[in-house]
Length: 183
Length: 124
Image (cartoon, rainbow over all chains, first blue to last red; front, side, top):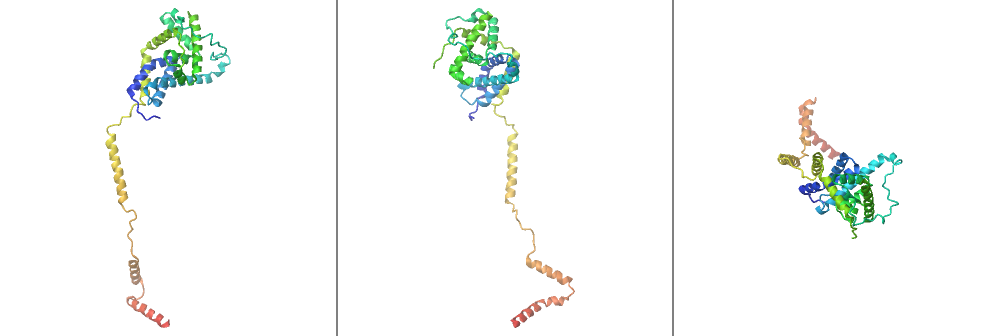
């Protein structure tokens, strides 16, 4: 581990800038604020313990990497607990049978959110994001909300850049469908 | 690096998400603050209490003095003993006092020893 001593006030400031978005991400993953709070706290602990000695420019990807790991662990635990239910329910996490070319986004399209007013758009987007498979949702949130590039998103999610593109493409298509049907 | 552009509507999605994060209630923000402070406790340097330093120094001095004293104290000092000659004299005196032989016998003991050596010389 690096021996450099972290500047506590800098770490505090950094965590303040990410904690709300981190909580919302975890909340979309768990659909439960208390569990989301636990995940965020775990992520903060892990980040402070292991990564604050790294350069501050790397903190955001490192923090989200810890959070992403905690979210995945949470889903794994849930999957183990509720495995018997999987026989009866389809998770929607399957990645097969999707025509990615047909789903390629049209850059000029005003998009499905324009038709929705303020709080309605928020509710619709929140609901649509919660229904996404975990990896698709994480790819969307990291790329679109955090603004990470593909390479950074891949590093955070511990997958290839190609996987990030695939997850994101499917997430965009699924969100569009969900938001259009909401309107 | 090939960065595929995101569709325009994702900008609106980002704005909606930002608003949802900014709109978190006070209780949730307070919990986030407490979680952050607990996490930061790990990064804060541990504060040494003011009495730790003199107490530590005193303990160190005490240990040092103990070690020094123990080091310079001869651990294999001979116990008070009686030399062989002294022990022999003491035993002889004791024999003389407790023996039934007269004190003259012991006074002539040197003579008997000389006589004994003379006889051996004559025989040899």
